[in-house]
Image 1 (cartoon, rainbow, N blue to C red):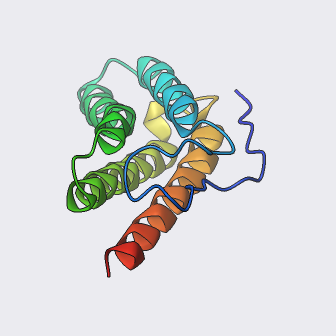
Image 2 (cartoon, rainbow, N blue to C red; image 1 turned 30 degrees about the vertical axis):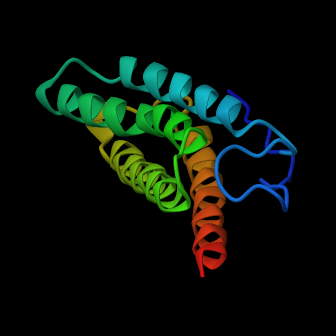
Length: 141
């Protein structure tokens, strides 16, 4: 699966203290949805072995979590809540990256066709969420 990166950054309007921005250049939720779909498809391609099942379960949990947690970010009740939920998304994305790297290293698991695209997209999502956390921390001061 090809990922459309568009080279754009997530931007929030100046008048939005926390919660979803009305002026985003692209829809981050759509990107997270597509990523979650790809993670599910990747886990389904892993072998039905003890290691394959364990990794698939872990990858399913952390790889689909940012999508639902992003919904929590958009419904944040305060700036502190917004920042906390952004950090959860970032933490789950970083965990997903580690599991994906493990899949890439384990020869017995095979090489899923969409692994390279997943690794590229996870790097971009991590950068987006890390930047959002930094911005939110700066705005909290």
